[in-house]
Length: 101
Picture 1 (tube, helix red, strand yellow):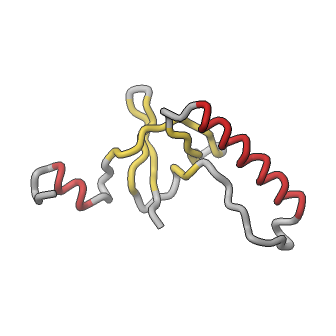
Picture 2 (picture 1 turned 90 degrees about the horizontal axis):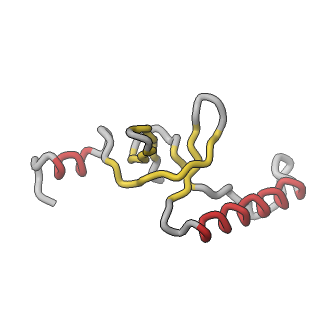
Picture 3 (picture 1 turned 30 degrees about the vertical axis):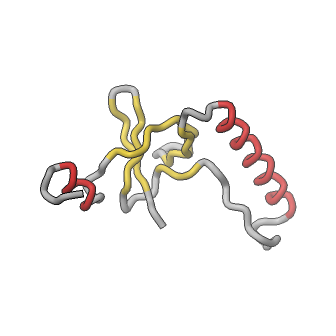
C-alpha cells in the first residue's frame, strides 16, 4: 500500500510518497460486515459521510480532496499530488538526472 505525507508551501498543500501516512484518500473504509466496533450506527454514518465526500469531489472534479492528519485533528483539504519527497528514491534520482526514466 502506498502511503503519503504532506507539506504546506506557498499557500499550497503538496502530497508526496512517504513512509509517513498523513495525506490519506478522502474516503472512509466500509467493512464488509457489522462488528462490535463498527455497528449498524457506524455503518450508516460511514455511508452518509462517504456520500457527502463523493458529492464534494464531483462538484470540484478538477481538484484533489484528501484528509490530512495534523497535530490537532484530521482536516479535509484540496491538495496537489505528484510532489517528490526524499523517500521516493527512484523518482528523485530521475529528476536529478542520476538515472534514466
